[in-house]
Length: 166
Length: 327
Image (cartoon, rainbow over all chains, first blue to last red; front, side, top):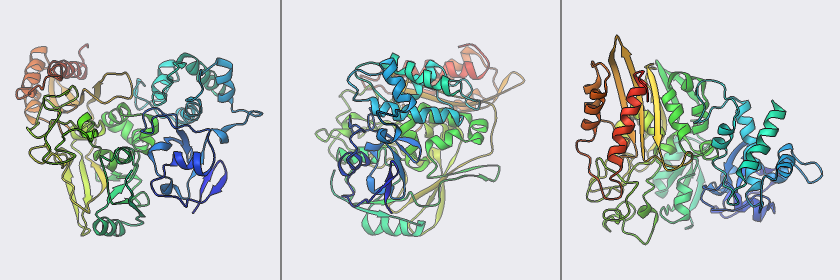
């Protein structure tokens, strides 16, 4: 079975060693997803797999026949940006921009997780409904590093979109 | 990464067959295994993808729950039954890794997470766990994250996970199917091994074994806490962690279940400490005795000496909080 990336089917005829990240960038030609550490520590390679955020560097492409992947290219376009993309621009949520596609894919999934009622390590009541706060955003985004240190503006951009959706 | 043969198993029988025939390793989430394969710490000749096995559900099991081996850490921590009745497990899972990793990491795979010892990861260093007989560069080296309990002259590595520490406090059981298709149940407390002179074996799994699930006993109630002390506020391994399930009735500790992360080659469980606490009224003096008993055979390694007072303080803080005292 093919893998579906941003709604388009791709055949998985690759060396089994190919990470999903390398498949996206090399075989599918979608270079929006970035390779940072290649070890699951920085989050630059974050994409949505069947709607959930994952590190695309730590999984093999061949394991994903039949799966659906959304990358930053599938979230929005320059003419019709996703609300998070527009908010990152408005709040200056980046400097060099290398971590930004991963940050935005991660933030998209994070808002969905909160809507689904998933709690985090900093939630007061693990069995209750999570309430969005700066502390919650920082904890939930700890898998995405920004070496320029644009964290305050990243948090502001995400908080704005979260409030608009609430 | 070294080349390997990749195969998908569509049933348990096929998984056993492929694992035995090719001497391969099962892969589920792959978040730890692929990291180690990139560094060539792990060099399996074959990978058997078990993600298509029907092991992805959490179902009632007697008075408890059966968590399928392929249930992701995220799904487990988000399950209302886990959050409501086994909060120590939800808290421990949420204390580990990141949302991205927990979406991929599985219940069975997480139990098999390997140590984060720097020398295990570094192919230029001696490591009895990676290459038996070469020695242990961590002993006498930089060993800040290493074991203070249960270590050996061959290995002072720690088990890095959080989930299994909570499972140990809850006295959960690992369900394993062997290559002959026979099922066996191993208490989580006996699943991971101490290093002894065979540190290359992290746990009791044999070739061809597949973890099919984890069984939680009936909910025990009580106050359930997971406290993790680490170098960063988020996304860091435990220096020390404590999972606690405590019940106080009529002013005395009726039940105490405690397990510890970051201290040893396995989630540490010491029934002597629980016995000392049970039947006694909570007090600082009692908690001091509990900590002293827990650490009576602790052995520091140089860079990790701080773990002994840190464990004492963390245990006491957890016991105070769980028995209604102040921090």
